[in-house]
Image (tube, one colour):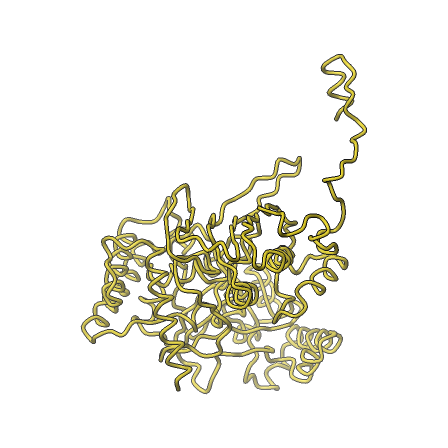
Length: 477
């Protein structure tokens, strides 16, 4: 680049080679003692932009760094590489007035990472978040464009300023406390929970086949399959993963639970697929998968199939676009097979649908869920089971049931549109938008929230306070 610059300017540049200076230290920042670079009593600020490397794509050297720095933390293997800088910085600045600011992957403020990183930082090392820039997209200037979703977090130890600031979408808000989710709320940590914190129906994953693709069929494959083997029609059901559920694309599967062996033997094509599944499961490295080789006609997970299969289920895709204002959820009848890529609630009431599809639940979801890039990653253990439901009157519940039905009625006006079509902000029908607004209002009133003036961040703060009270009640029990 210097040579090209010389050619453009038609002159020689006496700039290279770069000279060494005593105040520049080269090395692995996670392997050197920061006090050897500058004594902490002489340092005023730490500013940095650590490497953006997710836990699943670390090199072996990076994994060694992570184990060295984070090894004492609970489930440190779930933390991104940048977490190492937070731990080292928090140890370095103990009992000093040093102020820090790091640009980071936003995933350290989402999902389970908050509990495993920020709990020891805020509660044990007494770190205070002084300011935070919420998630923004950083476009790389490299020739290969890369969109990185970042946050900037300013923190300190003794320098506990009374004024703290949250920057979000070009706006700034002065707050009293910033927690690990970068929300103006108490320092709470939402961990994995097996059952709901309130008395509400449980949700579970759908079916997991682990079939190497043998039981799943496209529309064309299904038509060819049934043409060659007409006896197979009784075993074919509509099948919904998250993507084709949202986009209303046809997909099918072979469903062989409770199938008569004599009927299966009349279908050579099905028998071949069963054998393929048996071999696949037997040859897998996982002992758990191996154990299902002796029952190849069954999925390896059938979480919601109980003694009563004759119920409709509410389907909640695990991964969906962050561009949607509401989760693309809906009811499926008893004949559909729902995949592991979705959460399901058997026999869900209109009230449950109305709450989950409300702006209150969406605010909670956006604040605490994990993310796949920026897409929502919904879960029962983090999002649903920790969500504080309202204490409401029968009249309030009936109102929510009515507004929830209003959402379904508005959708029904557009039978040829998928959930992706209906919930695109540009194409969302006015009837559906109005139905959601009515539902939002009913749910917020049930919580005692001011639906006219309350912002989403205010809503999250109140929900976190409710969660804190519910958690205290559990400890007392």
